[in-house]
Image 1 (tube, helix red, strand yellow):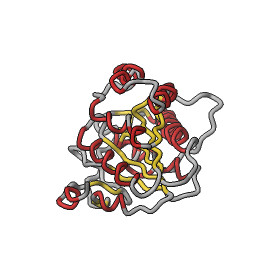
Image 2 (image 1 turned 45 degrees about the vertical axis):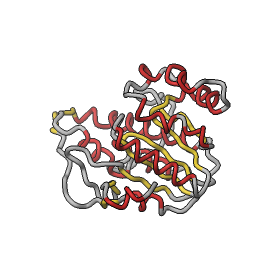
Image 3 (image 1 turned 90 degrees about the horizontal axis):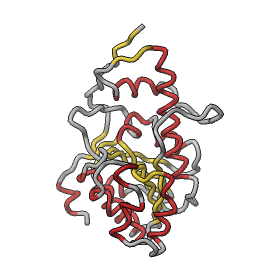
Amino acid sequence: MIILLASAALGGDCTEIAIHDVLSVPPPAVIVLGERHGTQPDLARATRIVRNLHERAPVTLALEAVHEDYQAQLDAFAEGNIEYDALPEALNWEEAWGFDYEPYARLVTASTTEVRVLAAGTTLGKAPEDARYPIPSGYISVLRDAMSGHEMPLDMEERFVRSMAWRDYKIASLATGPWDQQGYLVIVTGRGHVEGGKGVNWQAEQVVDVPVHSFVLAYGKQPPCYAGDQVWKPGLFERRVK
């Protein structure tokens, strides 16, 4: 049997926010930011958030864009053992991530401003057979929206949900595992791992004892608008915040 995956609802159930809403989160806290991969405005907003939060409390920054295999290279850069211009090659950026490096550069190199940077990216694919991880109820409804216009056999739905939940779990685990739950943990990941509240943000809530807040850094061309989502709407106020 084949089902047609529905398009995302465009209702007004989400909340439009600006930078001051993100910066009002008190520490300690996890802040999950959903980006459109490689999109300069989204990543510039993420950079500004990290910079402003760091003026308030220590910040640990976890990036899906850097695969977990390259944590040692991030650490070497932080210790001054890899030059700035050599970092993209050291991270195998073009092959491992594929989106332009430049929009991510200030985030990837944030250790120069005493921000701890973590590699939270993981390889696509299904979970290992012995993997144990939680799966949020109702996740398929969000995933159907993300796959708008495509068809999926019903017997593939469970595998799809498990695969996506595994990826969310891995990103959240790579981010939260090394964090001491002091100050802020900022996780920058794809917006599809944030929208609907059942992705990386949900997984992080299962493993930390501090509040988890999530924000989508911009609307897409045809945005979903899930109840509880907080979506950045650029405006006058953000231009006043350095």
